[in-house]
Image 1 (cartoon, rainbow, N blue to C red):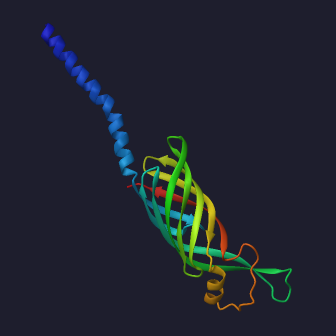
Image 2 (tube, one colour; image 1 turned 60 degrees about the horizontal axis):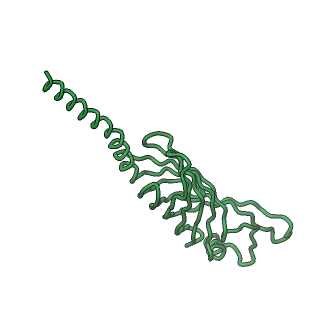
Length: 189
């Protein structure tokens, strides 16, 4: 009887240890599945398109490509006090490195990201933003960012691409420096 009771306790202890390790194993499996994600972006920072996210919640790489609308105010050549709002269309390639700064909750991360930009209208440039990443579901996150795009040769490239005269003036901010905001869905397959 005593032997049977000892065996029962041993089996119960083994099941208890197994059950206690399962949530940790499930969490580790879930985190491993979140290292590679698909991006669906609606953003002037990355363009309206898609891409990939690779890394941990602390550091990684996000790369996207898509259509990017550009809205600029061109100063009227006849009247410098008035300007015309013009809409342009561009293709944007956007690789970024990101670094998490803090996460007040397990499902919430805040950090900085930055990287190279290529615009079909304004050429090469740099980008930087602050981001907030929020977990909506086990395999779905939302990413909100606010930042800037800087194209050092953007005004010259823009005038050349759109066949604008060299005398064309832009209201601030112009094609060399743009403020951006956006929302991206991250899906982890």
